[in-house]
Length: 399
Picture (cartoon, rainbow, N blue to C red):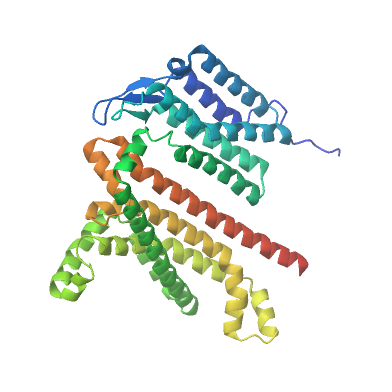
């Protein structure tokens, strides 16, 4: 039989093209990209691409979209690379486009006026990021190139912020008015998440080792952890309120440590409870799936049980265990925001203050750092786990 060509036809659409079509539809619908607000309270006037740059700006954007769409129809590596370059340039220039809009729309004497980000700008950012992720996955770039591109985009945004051209954004005005509180909340949020992940890792490792030693514990332990995982976060905070308040009233030294019905204590306990299932499951599976032939060979070489664990079993299990830490960390970063409802502090404070005041830019001041931190943590742990897998693969090949 002859070779069967299973490659898709050259004109077959791909997900990148679909994303670009959504982007084109967003521009065509005329969603407001930004709004000019006279002050914090009064609503702003939405400005579309047409009102900002006229037919020339619209034609330039549509031409860029047409070029990207044409490249997306050609599933060659060169075409995908050109698409990646164009999408990266669009993302890098977005902050500077805002700088130009702010300089054009606001006069120097308008100290209370601010520029708000409209639905069109968020839709534009969303679909460009989708296109970037799809292109990165299809090109399968090396981790170093991925992080280099991420760093370049971050430097572009940082340079725009340092230039002062974005100070008139409503989001930046909210930040400057609460910079001290924001930095304190950011530190507290990170400290809470780090403590939760650290304690969860110790408890999960202990439980995984105990279940490996006594197999009868496995079903009961996972059942209890699964039940904890199904309890809604607010309900768990409420369940912890009464016993912790009682303990704080009964033992004054607990109250002196800050352990009471509200605050960091119920948030910490609840987040640890939510983190135990993914952390314990990954640790148990990772340790249990190490091939018995490998450990038998290590014992045959004269290694003690402790040496087999620390030098063989644990290094081989580490990539899967890192996946559990990644899941737990990302989950804790998000759930720590909800803990602000019980006085635990953190970035969630700005989210709920903004919702109470109907100030969406204040909500974004709390929500955007949480999203960025979660993405950064997810990327770092994923890259580390992938690097360990590659190192193990090279070791197996040499062996």
